[in-house]
Image 1: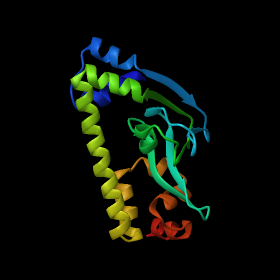
Image 2 (image 1 turned 45 degrees about the vertical axis):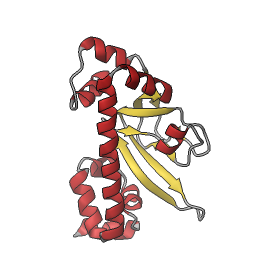
Image 3 (image 1 turned 90 degrees about the vertical axis):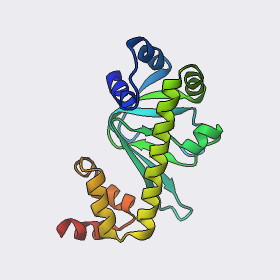
Image 4 (image 1 turned 180 degrees about the horizontal axis):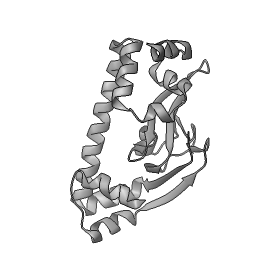
Length: 188
């Protein structure tokens, strides 16, 4: 499974076997069951996580009790509460498993250590972080400027495999629409 991480990093820059083995030695594998939390609001967030297998969702619960889905993460994606991870503070979101999941976890200490020792990995993390910011900006603009149909079409275009793996209630929550609205969009 760690070959997936190597493929992921190698899309930016190649790594020799020795370099990749060294990078991988800083990660810790972790297996989680369906519905198990990877990150829980109020707890410390010591790690960033690369998804080897499975599907997760990051959520925020508003004061009125409504769950808002911020992000999904499947194979070949990274996920954590980045604010809590980088500031070493308590989590403000929850991340739980929609499917049984396997991740490679990287502590902030090990991330910084790798970045100081290997320019290649620092470059990879910078490129991936920039791509994450772009995706976040697109998501926010979509929520602000697009109607439900447009958001649904964007979701299908961006994440075609997720529509087969996610219950419609979760897709609706991610899009910010009711389950009924989503059903009408499916029918069209």
